[in-house]
Length: 450
Image (cartoon, rainbow, N blue to C red; front, side, top):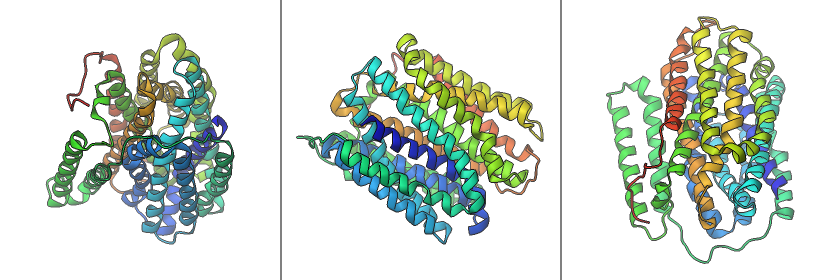
């Protein structure tokens, strides 16, 4: 079972890094600017983040094996359609569909893992192995993305199809059969208001530079997002079977984990997007050269992740997450201080990437462990979905803000226009560090009694 779950996480890492490398080539071929290209990334994030909670709930209620296999089949189909897309809008739509599929496979897979391996050393070891395969997929995806983009960006979108089919066959044969939950129900109104609210908020942030922050084109979507997200909270407090039992947010560790994952994933995804555009469009680097430039972060994560479980057993999740956020903040800080107008690779980029890889190796699996500590088995899917939702939605919002700060491309090799984006990701990481330095034992969200 763990082998199947690791293969799917490997596929997620592979797909994410390959697509990032291919973005400049996609933009040139389909005539997409920076604001449009970020929707290829954010379309996936929003489909993923918007329905993750529903995916986790579906896993708990309908049976984890059934939900996992259906969603994996959808992921393969959307990957194939993306490779055949002839317009930017269709490509974005397929990315959104893949995000929806991942919204069901990710929390289902993590809840299979956490309900199979008991809390403590066994679960920590399983999570470290699980995280290792994600890192390996990311690392290999950088190289494959560079190689395949050289032949044509469509091969990048086609590559996940055979791996998804292999995982589907493996899952059919190896995943344990389970029964749907005897109690519970769905919450379609909660899922709709949450997804629509997040889409509206991100659209408002992305379009603000073009419309103006005080224009109707920005304020109306923001107001709609506020209304929808408020409605979501009210629905969850009153519906019989809520998508999110708000009482789960009374756990200080859950709050800390969800905010920490926003800082860790949100800052890095935006940093990679910015660096990819700068090196390929600004400096004219080839996709393969770009891939090898980013490879050190994947190597560090792949090498360091297996030991994170033992470190958690010895020092606890809180200490390890603090170390992760220190390394991450130092990575962006070093880049910010030393970049100048033309950041050198060996003196600026490489040290930053090594620090960021250290932060991910120490932090990602550890944050997942913290998010599910002390949570009942029947709500492991909810807790898993909640922390992954925070990662995806946080990444989407940070990337939307960064896109607005960057404006258009075509700045040549001068890094100065990219500096506001670097300031943003550094500030996000620093906020995550501060969060983990301040005790949260007394922090509770008074959102309801359930």
